[in-house]
Amino acid sequence: MSNEVRMMSFARRTAQLLHEDHQATIAVIESLDELIARARKKAPDVTDPAVKKALGNATGAIEEEISNHFGFEEDELFTRLEEMGDAAIGEHLRSEHAALLPLGEDVAQQSRDALANGFDDASWLKFRTSAGELIERMFAHIQKEEMALLPMLEELLDDETDMELSSAYAEIH
Image (cartoon, rainbow, N blue to C red):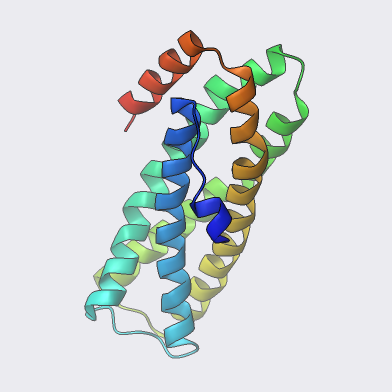
């Protein structure tokens, strides 16, 4: 992910909170990417602190953050964009959410299983494949939201709506 996306900041609190979540998600998927790159085809030792941390972060962050984040966007943001006449971006991002959520849940479950039982060759291959797909799709998805959705929120939200949405988002975290 480019440093340009990482360094962004937003005037609207709602956009800034979503951006901060994106940064946290990027950190988790980068740690998975590093785990895969380090281990390559050889299953890593799940007692290694770095491996344990990457898998542990994946279980919590993927399930909670992604689920809450996606739900908020779909329930609160995309519906407002549709009401303002811009349904296309919400439809596109919803379809990506529909693909990412089950993939993320699968990677989180595989991470939990690995923490409990370790990896064998077959489970490591499956994990590498699933996590690799999640990493690729998630990076692309976050980049779309950072470059399209969040700037759109900057323009469309008034102060009152921004306060209402940012408070609602903060409550689910």
